[in-house]
Image 1 (cartoon, rainbow, N blue to C red):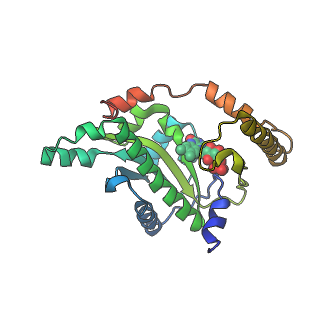
Image 2 (image 1 turned 90 degrees about the vertical axis):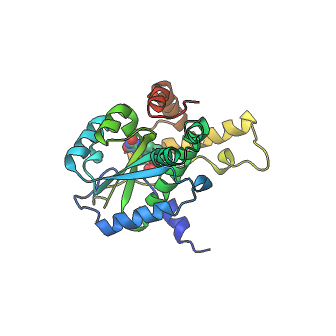
Image 3 (image 1 turned 120 degrees about the horizontal axis):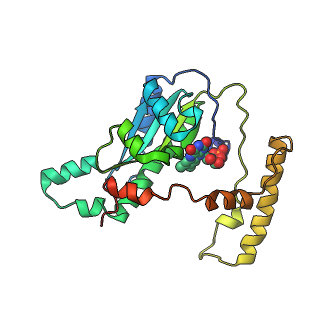
Amino acid sequence: MSEHVYNLVKKHHSVRNFKKENVPEEHIKQLIEAGQSASTSSYLQTYSVIGVENPEIKEELKEVSGQPYVVENGYLFVFVIDYYRHSIIDENTKADMATSFESAEGLLVGTVDVTLVAQNIAVTAEDMGYGIVYLGSLRNDIERVREILDLPDHTFPLFGMALGVPNEDENGSPKPRLPFESVFHKDRYNSDKSVQKESLDKYDQEVSDYYKVRTNGERSEVWSEQIAQFMSSKQRLDMLDHLNSSGFIRK
Ligand SMILES: Cc1cc2nc3c(=O)[nH]c(=O)nc-3n(C[C@H](O)[C@H](O)[C@H](O)COP(=O)(O)O)c2cc1C
């Protein structure tokens, strides 16, 4: 095996601090092509990617996300689940397709398709020497994002991605991931809580040590604490309404 891809993906960390250097057009084209080479469920290709260059549009999206790197980057992508073109085929062929793309399965297919495209782009961008960060924060106000980007019915902005050349003082590093035994199950799911508990204790300690070193002792929270805090804050509970009004999960 060539170690190249393995080493590249193992080096990943989100970058939130970019040089003021635009990503050239030819790289954007290559990135989109790399994205489009991902597998796609039943050849449906239920995605669009919006490349945002206009500084005013970036500024408006930053107001939604609250994160400065939505503006301060080399390039900004917004990844969209897209059944708009399928709805045009439906109109043209009168094939009764809407039940499929308005179903929960339609949403799952679109979500997976978009994500595979985005991750192909992320890995290719990192191979080109860029850093990336995904931006789920664009879902803070779906209606506003739909307005800003002129999104038609049967499309849904799933997340954004900022990319660019990492700044010299960008000092992120790969964050430890869950232990192998915690995420990998042989043949059948192992729901033995003591196995998960043992892995989690080990991992909590590893994450706490990681933060202590990275922040000179300022942070030391364990992973379980971080996750409990985040998930108990119950964010974006209005997503089903936004999906419905965008033409998803109507059946
Ligand atoms: C779908 C998705 C949405 C994300 N949204 C944001 C975001 O809005 N802002 C942000 O700073 N990071 C965001 N992230 C980055 C995660 O916080 C990051 O991947 C995670 O903490 C692991 O860190 P790492 O990427 O450095 O390994 C997002 C990641 C994913 C996959």
